[in-house]
Amino acid sequence: MGCQKLTTLHHAAAKVANAPLHMLRAGVAQAGGFASNHSDIASLYAPVLFGLTNACASAFGSLGVLLVGTILDATGRWSLVLLMVACVNGLSAVVYLAFATSEQLFE
Image 1 (cartoon, helix red, strand yellow):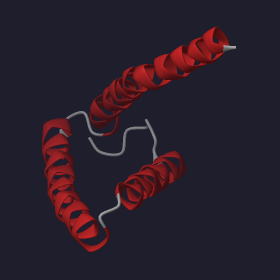
Image 2: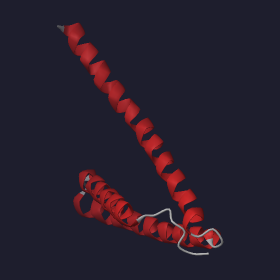
Image 3: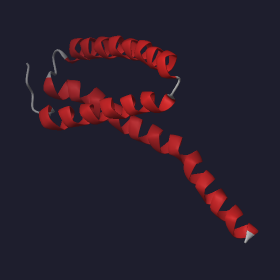
Image 4: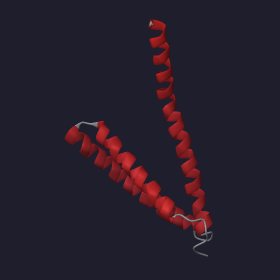
C-alpha cells in the first residue's frame, strides 16, 4: 500500500513539474504566430505595426503588475490573480480567433 501511494505521488509530482515546460511551449508557439502576422497583414509597415503593438502590450503589462499588487494587497489570494490571467487569456484568444486574418490589409 505504501509503495502504491508513493508511485501515485511521484506521477502527480512529475505532471506538476512538467506544467511550466508545457506552458513555455505554448507561449513560444503563440509568439511565433504573433510576430509573423505583422508581415502578413502589412508588409511595408510591419516594423511600425510591431512597434505599436509591442508598446501597447508593454503598457498593459505594466497595468497588470499594478492590478496584481492591488488584488494581493486587498485579498492576499493568488487564486483571484490567476483567475484574472485566465480570463484575459481566454478573452484574447476569442478576439484573436474572431478577427485575426493573414490577408494583406495594408500595402
